Image (cartoon, rainbow over the protein chains, first blue to last red):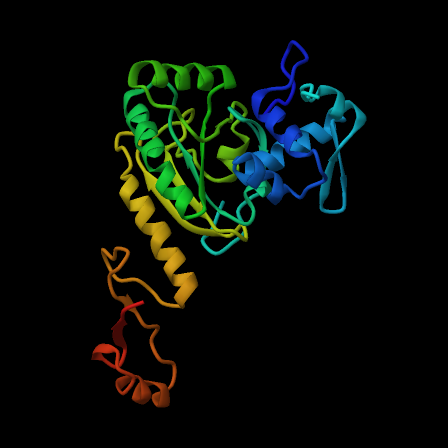
Amino acid sequence: MACINAQGELTESAGKILAALDQPATTEAVAERTNLPLFRVRSGLREMREAGLVEAKEDLYLLTERGHSLLPMQPS
Amino acid sequence: MPRLGSPAPSFEAVTTFGKIRLEDFRGGWLVLFSHPADFTPVCTTEFLAFAAIAPELRKRNVELLGLSIDSPTSHIAWVRNIKDKFGIDIPFPIIADSNKEVAMLYGMLMPGESKTETSRCVFVIDPAGIIRAMIYYPLTTGRNTDEIIRVIDALQTTDKYGVATPANWKLGDKVIVPPPSTVEEAEARMKAGFECADWYFCKKTV
């Protein structure tokens, strides 16, 4: 999936997955929220975990501080 | 070499969607298929055909994964060329198996045909990671994607109802009731209301 491009920005699918982790979620829940196939979510989360953007606690994935920082700013 | 009924060999591979492991598909069906080379005419027709059946396969919880002994750059260029020339997006990843690692694991190279290009192989892998069907076509013959859907339907029907499927079976046709294993079962079979030509050959609707 290559979650971060050469410019250090999130790729589109990685952005979708990170945005779906506003609350801790299982891979299945992320697939449902993003409408991405399960295999893409699994490979994407693995890559983002290696990049330090998400962490896993048992079956749940959650954003790290770095992952949070890469999310687009939410309108207040 | 892969065998029907055995676990599909594990791999991690570079694809057009990034690094993917076989295990990423666990819980769903997978059609892993190889093609000889990017930017070749028969393969291009096949990719258009695989892209066309992708929505039907997805309804059946089946993902597609292509493979050839080409680089990621070549795959990306070819996929973009298909989009440019035919207006079709390729909605599945393609393994760039430059070191032939996955091709060797799955016996996709047929030295009698080519030592450098994978033949047209299809492996149907079930949600538990077991190889359920293997189909091999030569370099010169493009695959029939309707047959791939038919095989998936047959395997899923077998799993759901514990039945077999006859020659040229299609979804909605009658299925074969497994043959009885005892005289008593054979006797009971004839009274069970199946459509029987004889005690060993009964069909039913599912």
